[in-house]
Length: 233
Image 1 (cartoon, rainbow, N blue to C red):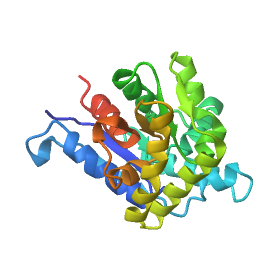
Image 2: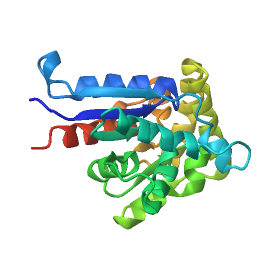
Image 3: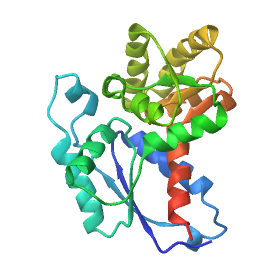
Image 4: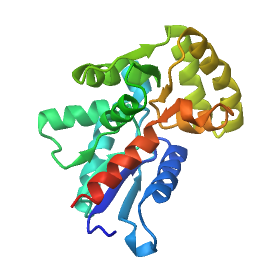
């Protein structure tokens, strides 16, 4: 296996999630030598304002930073781009609709929904940041393909958002301890898989000790999508 394409990764949102994505991608690439892995350009644009904070009306606009990141990766030679932040895709969709960025993007929302449909066609629990939930990104994209997510009550959504903040702060063990009873309560209500629709959530879930087969990771779905496009004949 070999690809001549260069993958651009718009990361830093947050840094731990980007690092985890790169690890997952390296593990999943169908390669037996270094040379069979794809070339990558990683832009850790950590100064990008928080997407959820902006969407909740409490912080600066991340649009200029996100658009600059996409354009910079293209300028540096990326043939294909992915972004390791779910909420950022609200703005990426907007850029594409407005014609501000037209380059090829592996869309984390569509990839994650595709993975969920394969694993559990009857639906799954959606866990994400408050920003992602407010945009309705997952619900809109899922409705377009006839898929249905179970949505937790708003107080639980706040607790889930707090879990993502813990991971960003490096408190992974504590995040796992907080996330486990949240997940178990959701399963008590409806026993379907959990979709980690924030790139910090797979890190938190891994620290819960709960069964891996009952979790759908947006990072794993994004890696699968990138590999498909990179090695497409």
